[in-house]
Amino acid sequence: MATNRQRLHEIVDSLPDNQLEAALCFLAEMGDEEVVEPETAAKLDAALSELGEDVPLEEVRRRLGL
Image (cartoon, rainbow, N blue to C red; front, top):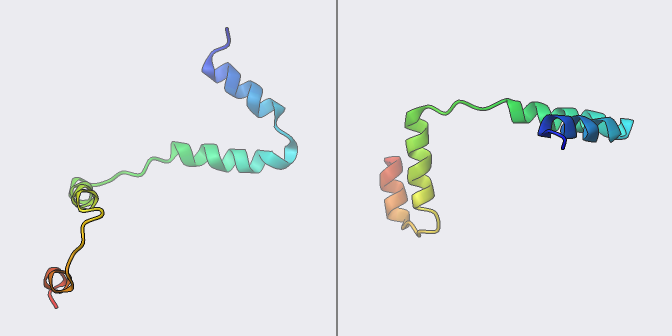
């Protein structure tokens, strides 16, 4: 039974030349993990928890200090 790494090599070896650049870009992006600061992560979590909630215009203005 082939390992995941061996299977991946087989798949890459079977790709036509015109698809190699796209595969390379895709795999390179997978290795570039973005570091998210704790403060940013907290803001993202808060935004996700509000997803789908209506926010009145007055509240938006208040949050933006307008």
